[in-house]
Image 1 (tube, rainbow, N blue to C red):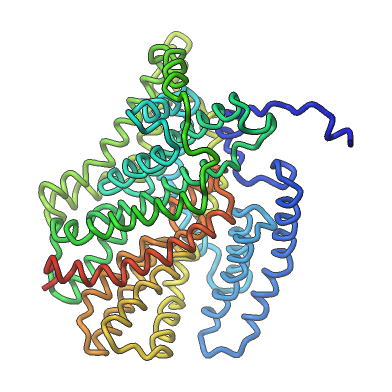
Image 2: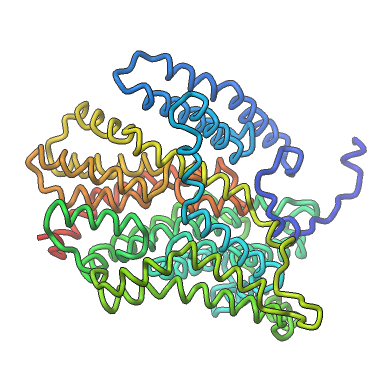
Length: 536
């Protein structure tokens, strides 16, 4: 036996491992089996030579497209290889791509970096600061124990994941998907911490195990991210692509889509998608244990040990409550007055989710915990520890999304693909719309995907003599997909930023759900449109 094998194992500090924001970890910072380490080393080494090779080969091809489009496409392909293989931390891969865009003259530096001022970036910053307070002061842990104490839920990891997904879906129907995931992530990490400590206390895992690599954790966090995308389809205000797609469809066809019509059409599809999502997550990321024996006693003891709410917890709940209320308000107004009402335009415009997020986070620096010492709920050193890597990562994703549209590359891809496939029937154009929207949303934001793909699909359908309503609506729904990469949606970025979902797990699970989701949209949407009469 070697000295490493005989040395006593250090007991893992579960809370530190899961709540310390150690997202982009090197091989030396992870606990891997020899086989896993060989795979990870090979994957990362491959990326070092494959990324520049893919870019160079594509740039050398004699393609009939604008130079700026070909250069952007070549750089983006190389960046995708960097994101999937991780030879450098994923945010650094994005920054390398942004640097290459400027160096190769696709756009000037000022234009390339402008999207970093996106409202989504401020939503990330504000929501992450709120999450930091929830983790620091134990509010997330209280929420986690509450979820685990619900009758029947806490006894099974399967039920827990499904119940948590249902909560996520319902919230995201009225609150932005990004905000929903950001506000629920601390609770998810709290629940995972409880489960991991229970596994550790009962000797079901090694003393020095890595809680960030538990399959139950990957399933729980991916349910949070993907569930929000599914729930966001339920109402027109559930996700920005819905409003963008609906507006473009109404302008092109002259058919109005009411709040009720949209929801009636989307509800059966969302329900079917959720069932498929739960099956995919639990089959591909099967939890280490299914039944959690004795959880009621464990949760009861831990909740008692928490004691009454502290001043810091109360302040955190106030800031959290104000933020969530302001996030929900536009959705309530839309439900009551409709999205065409002027009051909805005013409130949704002023209560921008990014502004609301930073406003709510600011309350944490105003609400005191000790007025005599002028101590607030959070100090700046706490806020500085938020996951800036994920913010940088999604910022680079927004940049690529904007350039796909600005350079016309997305339109070129759609037009060329359409001509090559010779689309002429409703089914073919609908299938093409869904697949194209998913493919584009994988490398750019879902909002950009809807804005780019729907205008491409409508003239293709009209030219083929097909009613563009169903294909355009399919593109709108599919724009909220794109589950394979952290940059595909803000939800994915936040999930990956938790440090619990390896990139290989996200790619594998997201690929399967992309395919099944596309099938549901292609087959189910025309049926629901026929049943509800929407758009006729």
